[in-house]
Length: 179
Ligand code: FES
Image 1 (cartoon, protein in one colour):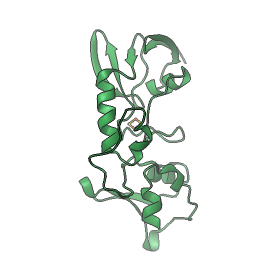
Image 2 (tube, rainbow, N blue to C red):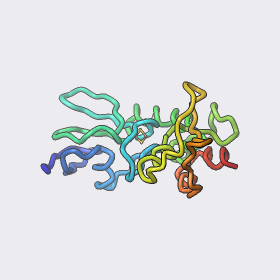
Image 3 (cartoon, protein in one colour):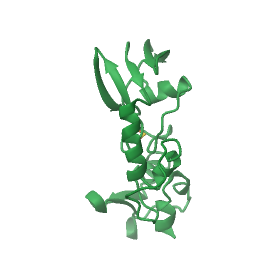
Image 4 (tube, helix red, strand yellow):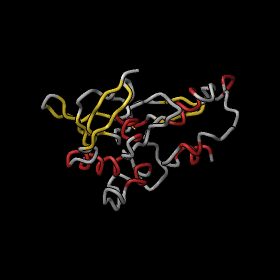
């Protein structure tokens, strides 16, 4: 596979063609916050916490680094003013999962927190169960603000109670919903 050269935070980085900006940054020692990324799973692009600012042919835009592939000559800023402004908002909106980045972005509380374990819709539990466990014991139920992961029950139930989805849930929703 070919190599491309891009710039991440002003530093020249070589990366294999086809990998994402997030993967290239990780290899270069640059940490980008994520909530729905897991190296064992297909990229999902749900949380937008990994948003970065890219510059290409003189034009800048915001992209999800877990989905966007590296390109020759791309310039990436992982903590630009625009990016950090959005991340601060996401930390609040995706509370309590986003709370792990609260200190980094100077957020002390969320205006949107319900005070209970809540689901950030990162999909890690549903995707892990399907992609790694091949079990499909979880699915997304409902639409809009009512959308939540749910356990398939009844005659089609396939949950083996392995409990592996618990540790993936940074918001604590899975644990609370199974209690
Ligand atoms: S980690 Fe990229 S959108 Fe969630």
